[in-house]
Each structure stands twice: as structure tokens, then as C-alpha cells.
Image (tube, rainbow, N blue to C red; front, side, top):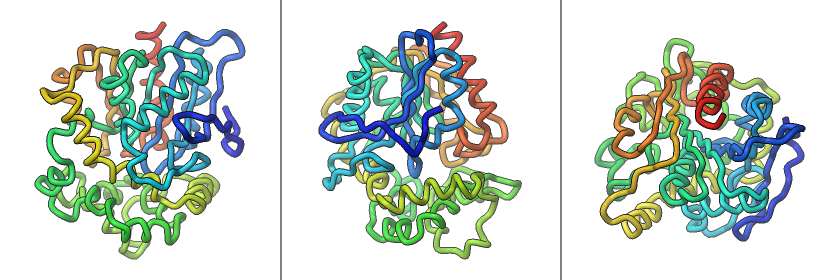
Length: 327
């Protein structure tokens, strides 16, 4: 496993990305696995996946996505679109000398793994999405979320400077808010265990007293401090900018595919979690409309933070699929 305190700095797409990688001592399989984290996460979120994937023969690459961790954080919000981050991923493939990669995205990182399959099929050997529905944007995203979930939805609040200031004020507290497991009464991301307007307004509960937050922190003090220290240096702006670029992503989709997105032709594994209600498993039910070759699997007992809550179960699911599809 790489030393998560000592990243490589790799020049891609006009910036420097902090990248962590490991590979077998003998020849690796033809395509690398690129692990793409979500918000608010880091490459460190994949720490439990490195060893099993490397032992299975894969070169594993995990960047801190632009705007987070040790990677550069451009000042211009428009430099955080999905297309820009797809170019970052292609730059990583070029750096390591690969034609294609297997892209594994969690949460908003799933927008990147799906995006590679849609917009960069020639660079994509496989797509794995964790806790992220297919990345179609059927109408202006802010209008869509307001229509479906009301004006207090988290996507709307992520657009604001007020939200950014609150998250930046105490990063350790912010991570204690986000990184929680459901112990029987929900968590901050799924208090009522239903995908509805109340769940999608979860971010406003950050104002509540910490002892009122349901569930328990799922990382230990050392792990939490790693996240807090990283975001104390960068702030949450870069990660929030991914959401602030959603209208630009929508405009690009409309312009590029005015008649609807093409189907993903690379093999797809869609991973959902039993206790993730904000990105609920049932969103994968219609993947036949978007993919030609796909499977879905459910991780029992896990909430939204699948790779950290139930790493053994997730690793088993990943390896089973990878061995069958890329033997």
C-alpha cells in the first residue's frame, strides 16, 4: 500500500495531481484500476482497497482529485467540470503509459467513472460506480433538484459561500458530521431511511448540536485527523466546485448529445449499499437503458461510505467481478 503522506506529484492537464499508486512485483494485468473519490473524500478513502486489488494483479492508481488533498486547486470554478476531470484521468493514463483503464468512482467520483464510459470510451476498459446513479442530467440540475426536493436540498446549499464557510470553520467537526455509520437510527445522510426531500436536505443538520447527530463516526481518530488536516489546508471549496459546475456539465451534455446520451459499452458494475438512502440502490434498476453490459450488487449493512464501512464485502464484490471480466 502506498504511503498516504508521500504522494507522487504528476503533471496532467495544466495542474499537478497528488497521486498514490501500487502494483504487483511481477507483471501487472493489462489495464490499471483508477480509484476516483467523491466529496468530501481523498485518495485515502481507498486505503482498504489497495492491497487486495494489487494482490489480484492490478496496478492501482488513486489521485487526490483536483481541488483536494495535495493536488492543485485552480481558482476558477469553471475548471472543475466533469470534462476537465475526465481530461485529468486521461492524463494519468498517459503518464503511466496505458491506453485504457478500469475506472472506479465513489459518490461524486462516480460522475467521473460514468463520464469516462460515456465521453471517453476509447480510454475505458471498465466502469465501476459506487453509490452514484448513472450520470445523465435530463434538465438543468439545480432546477431539477429544486423541483424534486425543494429549495433546501444539499445540491442547492453546496452552491453557497455560507455552506463553504461552515464546512471550513472546523474540518474535524465537518468530517464527524459526514463520516458516520447507521447504528439503528439512521445517520446524518439518512435519518429517516427514505430517499425524499428531508434526506436531501441533510446538510442543514450540520448546525445542530453534535450530540444530536444519529449514528457513530466510522473512522478512528487518526483517520479522521488525516482528513481534517488535508481539508484544513485546502478548505472545501475545490470539492464543492464539482457541484457548482453541474450547470456547465448539463450544458455540455446538451450540446454534445442533443438526442440523449449514448449507451456505455464497456463492462459496468454498479455497487449500492443497503443503508445508503441518499444514493439509493434502486436507482440502478434502469441501467439497461444506459448500458449494454452491466451488473449490479448490493453491499449489506453499508451506508453511503461503502469502501470504508464494509471494506471486506466490497473488496469481495470488486474482485469477483474483476476476475470474471478481466481474467
